[in-house]
Every structure is written in C-alpha cells, then in structure tokens.
Length: 268
Image 1 (cartoon, rainbow, N blue to C red):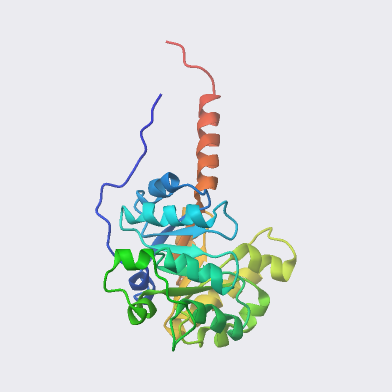
Image 2 (cartoon, helix red, strand yellow; image 1 turned 120 degrees about the vertical axis):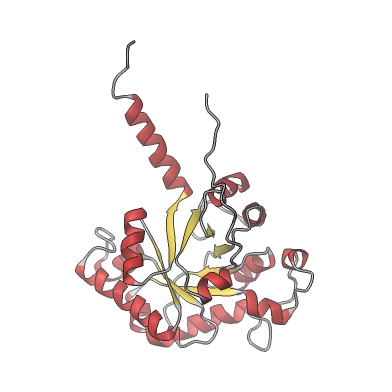
C-alpha cells in the first residue's frame, strides 16, 4: 500500500497575507474544512500561496485552529481564518493564534464592515484587545502598531444587500479585500444555488464586484469550484482565488480512484 503524499519541493514564496492582498498578486488558496493539523500541513505543502481555515462551515474548533495555524507555518504559508460570524471574540482569537488575517462572512453594510475592521485593529484604529499570544512568539517585535499593519481584514460580499452597498463597504478604511461567496450570492437573489456563478445575473454581479475592487485599489477574492473556474475568475480580475476544500478533494480523489479500479480487472 502506498503512503506517499505529493508535495511541492519548490521553496515557499515567503509572501505574507498582507503582501498578497496589498500587491494584488494572483494567489491560489487551499481551503481547509477538516479540523486536523496534518491535513493542513498536506494542503500547505501543495504549493498554494495561502490557506483558509474555515471555522464557519468547516469542522474546526478553536484548539484545532491554533494547531492548524502552526502546521501552515512549517511551509511559511500565510493563513486567513474564516470566522464563524462577524463578532469580535472569534476575530480576535484567530489573530491572537497567529493568523495573518480573517475572512468575515455576511458583511452586508458599511456598518458591518466597520465592526469587522475594528475587531482586527488595536486602538485608536479599532478595539482589538491586547493578548497576541502566538503572534508575539512568532515576532518578538510585535506591538499594537505592528499588529495593525500586519492584520488583514477580508469581508465577504455574498448577498444582494451587500452588492447594493458595495461602494460604501469598499470605502471603509481598513477593509483590505472582499471575497465573493458565489453560492450565497445566488441564493440571495434566486433562492437557490443552481448555476451559481454562471447565471447571467450572477456573472454581471461578479464582474461588477471585481471592477469596484479595481476602482478602490482593493484585492478581489472569490471561492472557486475547480481550477477552470479559478482561471475564469482570474480573467475577470480576481486575484485571491480560494480553491475547493480539502474534504471535497479527498472525496473526488477517492471517487475517481474507485471508478478507475472498477473498470475491469487486467489479466496477464
């Protein structure tokens, strides 16, 4: 039985999440929903430029999240934590664990965006409480100013309401990037996600979000269903490209292997 796991021998780029977002580099992200440090190590060894630890929909608790941040650090791959909701405690705990930034779901208004930003910044820019824990271990020079400079706030635009408030959301100081959730965006206007990211209305909205980000000098991010979709969205101007989750890839890989094995025995 083979236990070999494929990794990327190329050295890590060393770019921080702040650099990827601020410079709007095309960056492919591994999406982690399995609450396991070794699974995160496998994903981060693949060659992706960043990883997302999904605490909103993934099976990840606080303790697992901290270990997963450490696992990604082995390859110097920056981490964004998608917090369960737009509330301060979850945002601060992710940053104190050493995440480079947070992805905040369901940000529908400029007020929502201001709340998200404030939780990621120390006073006077916000109300993040001092207690960096792993952040201080990783960087002995870490202080409030450094924390404010390093911490990335990515807000999710995934509803019709958020789309209508897009200019106001992007105008909030401290919003570094938006990330589109195509499924929720489709559900918000159609009541279903069949054809999410493909319908005429979806494509028009997704294109306009990228254009608005370009006008504001912000990185546009989006969740992608596969590599082809990532290329399509990159062509629209998206640079922060979240690839399919580890759980989905394991399932797809096993299904493909089973299909291959069941094609018929080879007799020699």
